[in-house]
Image (cartoon, rainbow, N blue to C red; front, side, top):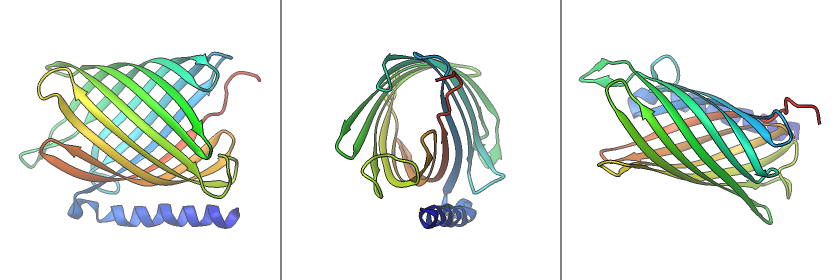
Length: 225
């Protein structure tokens, strides 16, 4: 398994090298941390930080911080969550960088299903977006799939494939906001931690852009089991 981890590390480094020339190729890089930590038998704390760049590092596109409290309707399967997000964006407008700050309230429902090796997840999310000069609402639906490769289950020291598709729909015009398609290779470090390195293509009404993504997932419980 040490060889498997080494191969994944090399994959991450290779993706980083590709992203080094990202600005010329209109390819961005996202570095992400996701925490989903039990604080009681039914409650979980969600926390995430996403550092999104126009290139590999240094040219910030967006800094996103989200947190929330979730409740398990059924253990490790159906979860509802209320959360808050802070988003700092620095888009280019006519060649110059601008700064936009958004505060976001969101509600979501996640349900999981398992079919043999296939670990399926549906996420339904409603967002209330408080922008500097505007208020908007948006609905998001994501379907994701994790498939273990080196084991039949998502066990420690196993390699897996991950894919998802997510669509964003506005409550006002235009209704279609964007669609994201993602594919990655992941490694389960232990029962509470895993890493992924992959590629996401984001389709908007007048734009189509790729992103290299590197993510770390932490599910260490805060409560005593």
